[in-house]
Amino acid sequence: MNSDGIRPLLEVRDLVKHFKVGAGTVHAVDGVSFSIMEGETLGLVGESGCGKSTTGRVLIRLTDATSGSVTYQGQDILALNKPKMTAMRREMQIIFQDPFSSIDPRKTVGDTIGKPLYIHHIGTKREREERIDHLMELVGLSSRLYNKYPHELDGGRRQRVGIARALALSPRFIVCDEPVSALDVSIQAQILNLLEELQDTMGLTYLFVSHDLSVIKHLSNRIAVMYLGKIVELSPSLDLFKNTLHPYAQALLSAVPVAKLRRTRERIILTGGVPSPINPPSGCRFHTRCRHKTPICSEQEPRLLDAGNNHFVACHLAHR
Ligand code: SF4
Image (cartoon, rainbow, N blue to C red; front, side, top):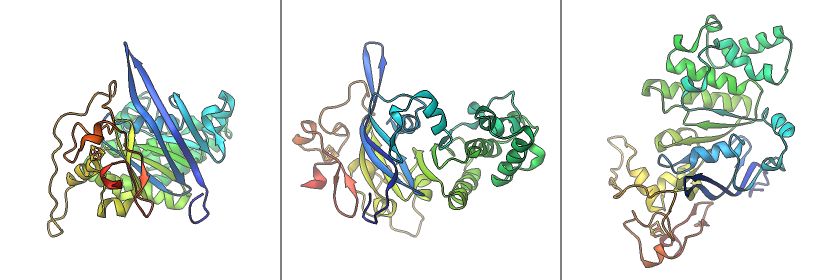
């Protein structure tokens, strides 16, 4: 429960996802904890391979967790059996990054959007058609596209099909997994605005995954920054941009373009590549690239602690 007495819709505790690769183990997600309040958007940002998309997929059990818990309205969904998880899927959906690869090219727009209704045996054929018409209108797709195939649509319309399909079962929680990164910049804002409107009208809760802080900023109430399987900073969105505490988050933020007449920002270039998640660095996982590191950084892992005003950071420097 937060300070306003509101219970989270979703609570994640010590979530771990490891993959076996040959003789090694990829530490994709390594003990992340956070909550998402009803109606909130939590942005999850980090470089490619940091574990953010895996976190989103584990939350809705598209892939199984190694350990930890995900509690949705008091139920540990990682412990649900198959029939109960199938029923839970009506509440939790995902919008994928690449609508072209997530949509069956042999299915029409209508069939794609209606598939979840068909799988869950919802309504008669006529009722499903009416629901599909309604969903198409909701996401701004003309009804004349009902019998078109994915290759006949542009990227923006294909993503609208993906969004309509995610909404078909009237979910409350949606993982938006890089939903605009495969789209032209001119289309990105339209899709972000649509997601915002749908959240307002349908009371949706989002986990919004992106590598791009400027995209995340647009929608998120709070933002979590991930690095090599760990959350290193978690803060209300405005506060993260005004008062960035973690050196990795500072570097990410420095790459976001700022309007010409606003304050200038020093660009922080990170040296060295992202270390392998098969053998992550000891102590603070960022120490191999951090310009502020001290001897303790490679020895002791910093905990994610509140630095004030619900602004959490995992850095020895910030808690001195
Ligand atoms: Fe840098 Fe040390 Fe902070 Fe890690 S704990 S971010 S290495 S200063």
